[in-house]
Figure 1 (cartoon, helix red, strand yellow):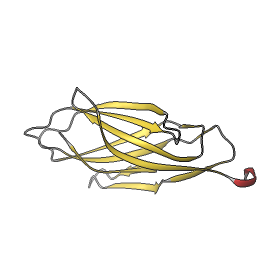
Figure 2: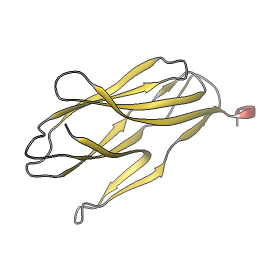
Figure 3: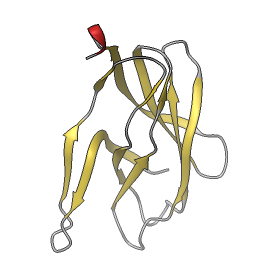
Length: 135
């Protein structure tokens, strides 16, 4: 099973074509809303996976958002096909505008599977604060 090396929420991702270096622009862990419910702007979830080309094949990733109340919403998924012979694999997910109904600690969850049961491998906090005075 592939191993998640890291994941990060950010506003933008830039990948250099020559060096394959990745820049995660404006890391994100919180945001403000003038009122609720609201829609957060689109963002990215950047991930890097360690894969064993001898063992690991395709794998499934599911993304969820968990609200402070515990309500979970699936926001996307993808079957990942690592390149042949690759020991590392980068996958960047563009998240749609997230529907936010509550303030507090939300969690962007990343679940992994290989055709069977999905298991959580990462949970990134996304704190939502109500802006005082609607500014």
